[in-house]
Length: 231
Length: 299
Image (cartoon, rainbow over all chains, first blue to last red; front, top):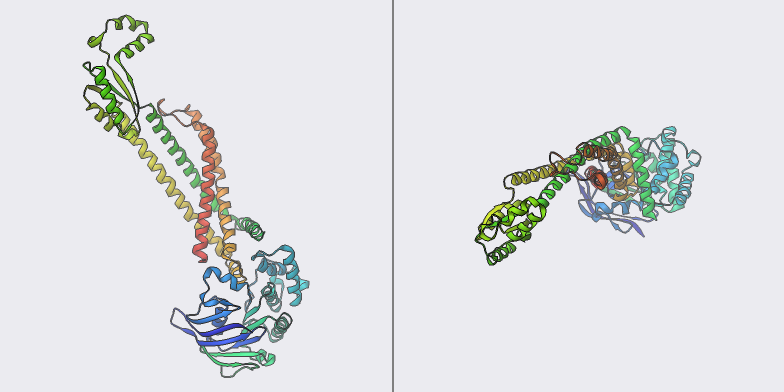
């Protein structure tokens, strides 16, 4: 069953630059997909459209039954509650502890305190940081900070996890640790994962579904792909 | 329950933010305080001026004297015409005999003099005392009555009353303008202060939006923060209203210049005004914050 459906999607920015041309793809529930491409290929734009940070200029985007293209600004939160997002720069709150950073995602949607505690501890255990709940972000390594961000992204049990270059700031060893965490989440929770990256090594090692973009065009969509040198 | 939890969290966050951004909060509170003091003065002035006008209006009557030729039937006709005037609230009629009797009762000195005054020889006249609905139109009404047959003289304190009423009306309008202008200025002030607070919390807000916080959840803490600033900003103006007006009232012994210009009694006036000042403070804070959040977050 498809979780994501894009039909003839086009994104043209106000400055006249077209980031995505006529893109049509479907992604199944529980799949793990890499979106690869060079700078300006449109991979970040694609991710942004999926969480409705950007609106497509043409076409339809369906995420978990929600028509993202037609979603009004006031209703965007409904989509965001169905997914988790991880960024290259972690986006943690520096004055809050690891626990508070993860709990924050549940507090703002009005979850109960006891439920928050249970789920936050579970998420932190999954990313291997249960022993650092009282630490502040600046007391953690880059890899650990990214794992906190992943815990925050999965704490609300999303169906979809969007990762925009999550290993971009990390060395190869830490990057592989992050990929291991993401793969475990994909397997144990059945969470659909879409990850934009330009890390050739990761893509080749993981052997997952690969969408290759070049200058906004879909070049290749392979089930068990490798890093396409064309990009 | 969920709404209650969110509200509890919003209140907690609002207090946290107000304390965290202490210098900004203090600046806002000071500005609200100064504005609200002026607003309180304007409100008290406006209400007192309204009261002056009311007192004058209450005391104001047109006295209509009929000529000596008027028969009781003529007086009846005049009465009818007065009654039909749309600006007439009420009237009383006193025949010259009733006036004479009243004067005789009031003083023994008059008694003997008045005894000799009979019929057309009497200098006393039949009179109507007319109260009007709109004091601004008193001159028009008096002129109309003057035109009725057998009406010889009409008096209503012309000149002085007209000037006083128009002066009070101008003062009242001016105070309204001052209040509105100050409220608008304060709203803009709050908008800018909250904007700075929002700017300091942009990262947090962007994360809130990413993890699916609704606009309501994002906006509410800021709106509550604005209300808190408004509430704290109204503390000094309330103290000023309460003790300041009391001192003012006692100093002037309850009236200005003449007995006609009477000040409103302090109780419950000062309490009512204080409540209005607090409500204005809270509303101004709320509206200002809502404006800032709307503009700045584009939600």
